[in-house]
Length: 372
Image (cartoon, rainbow, N blue to C red):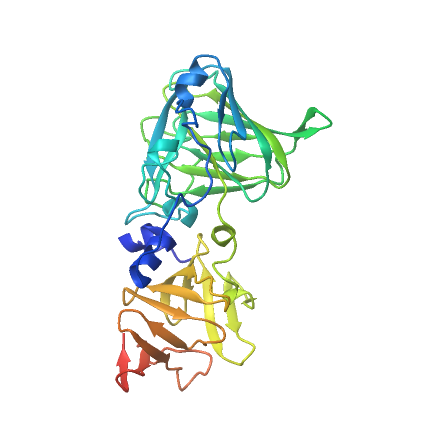
């Protein structure tokens, strides 16, 4: 299994900013919906909840979420940073997330992400979220920093004829991400028990903190209410936030890959309807990363151009490429050279592109064969 390469700073800033660098000015607002922890009345969630009042705020629309502290208190609005040069396997919707200080969602930088922090020294906190627009499989419940001796429980409900009915969590997707650790999740990460709805830190040295590991839960049905409860873990705290990633962030990086045929051990083979061959590749833990058996490590941006095109950030050359099924690969546009390239196949193997381990390209601007 290939590990994620370290991303340069330009990837950490996300698609919007990267394309701005390539094509000029491009306005970027908050990248995706997140629950505002400072509401339209400039109230702070911590102050309101700890006063015993409900906190009404925005998520997808105006005042469409109500938070209530059923028991216990919350501690703070806490900012983490998930981008930079060591994002581990963090998903692109977090490393590129841009929230604002004014709404209590971020710090106006890519990867700066604010969550609502549970109290450090009580195991009695129970926090309820009621959604005017139900959560669906589009949404992600992000829980950060479950470690030490901590355990948290999540309960979900669907509103039926005016009554809240419990929802099973057994079909929910659970994903573990690096957070600020910069490493790939391992046995130190929290264990998800869908039957009990609990995230439990494994038994280990309570002083061996991991620097904000992330657990993400995705509902498999409509959810109108969730209750997040700290069950155990004095001296530790976790953060919770709910986001709605864009479709491009949670699907395959582009329909460019729609024809990929799964082989064995996670390997895919892709050829296009025009007979051109992309070749062999595999997705890494974030599907925007691929390992192409000839190109090497690539980070994929959906070009959103109607042609199923993609931008590749190429780790070997530190350049951006563009290609598409109709343009079509093995033709590439190199933004650094500002030239169209043709990636030569291996003459001894028409399904491969490397020749003795070297990548050869024809540069249409200069009429020369280059390697890079």
